[in-house]
Length: 149
Ligand code: 5GP
Image (tube, rainbow, N blue to C red; front, side, top):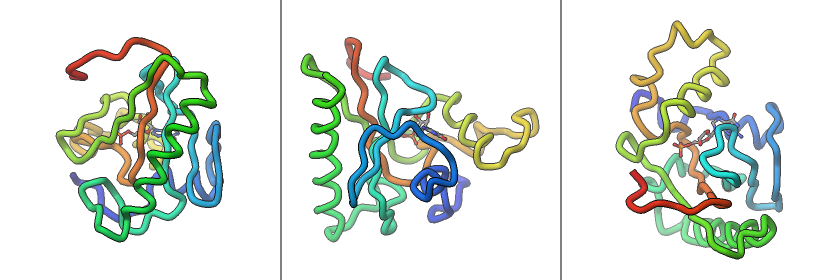
């Protein structure tokens, strides 16, 4: 993608509390907050507090195994906290073909640049994964479809 792989992202700003987020879970290692463009009644983004080069799952190295496992464990805790006893879905998008919606890419561009959207060709900037900071999506509160599309 055209985004510099290690550039600060909107999630770096959320961790530093430079921009607000609706936080649902926080401990010393992870932060979880409600997605700004929810794709389900419950849609939460779970991120490690330290990026450590993990701009996406495709950048994972053996040293990241512990935090990756902890993120999954945290997802389970949050699912329980949110009352998702009937089931939920975890998603990790990666790279240009691990596509998110155009809308979320569009929101990201607006938030990062503060420029009017009309000036931005966001489809070129965000071909897929829209935030290059590893995150797990926790989705629930409705029936999930397969294949996800
Ligand atoms: P992905 O990179 O996996 O395609 O998606 C990134 C997710 O972050 C999208 O679902 C998008 O809606 C969400 N997102 C982007 N910017 C913000 C923001 O400023 N606040 C919150 N809470 N979520 C955001």
